Length: 99
Image 1: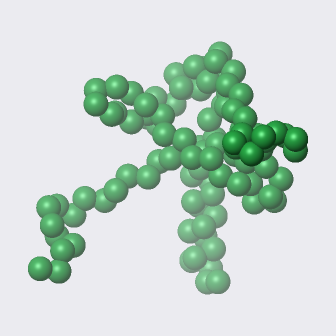
Image 2: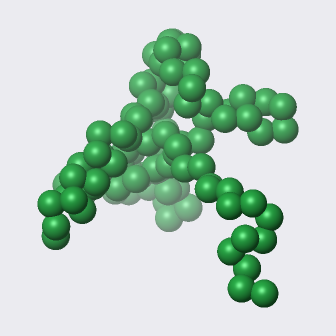
Image 3: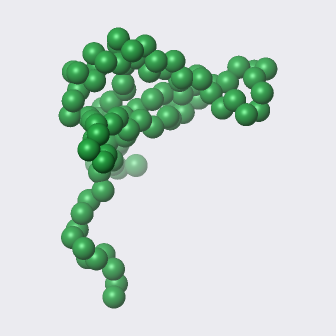
């Protein structure tokens, strides 16, 4: 791996935003198969974090929303929630089409 690639990956890791007040857990060992996990939300922590980070909210049909991805931790020891900050790059209409 080149230095530039390693630096880009490191910067990408630094750019991740972990929302406060949301925790995700794998299902208990004896949970039924239809249980995929557990999410615990602490409203006061989440609301304060949202007030402190309004730039991370997106608009959808006139409403504000927070896009969150659930990722496996690097050490394999559980899951994390990370704000999905992906924004498609617009090259204009049909610029990428080969015809």
